[in-house]
Length: 166
Image (cartoon, rainbow, N blue to C red; front, side, top):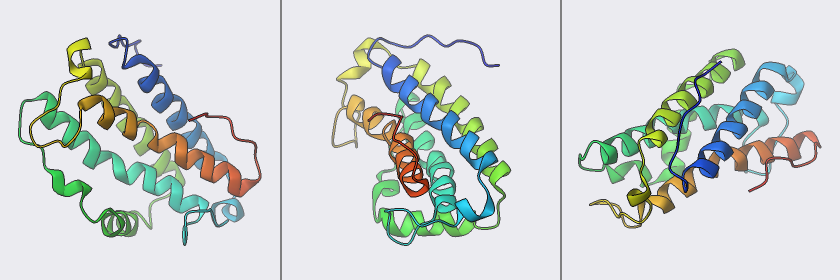
């Protein structure tokens, strides 16, 4: 069990959305059959297993960007350039990882995400960090929609009803 974290009012629902979707993704990663993991999703060329591995593989880039912002460092915007190539590279790097390893990675990066999100203040909501072409809230809001989106893609592929809400 993890300790309860306090978040700025604007961060709290975004953190909850991310946390809940990650928990569902980790549960799915540990419970789906090999056949389920190979089912295609609406993301062209991706399987259910690819969706799960992609979710985990995207986190280090985002955590690095958010950590730099919170540390007052320069933001490396190259992580947002040619996202399709970056996704393909990250997915290839994780191709041989088990679903249990993927679930663990999702949980660990989720804890790191929570720690960083807890550092955000009310003033950060409208702050536009240098090098970022939009306010910080847009970055956080956008990324905390990432896991729910992919969980919904997985559930649709499995024929399950949508539940995470976007």
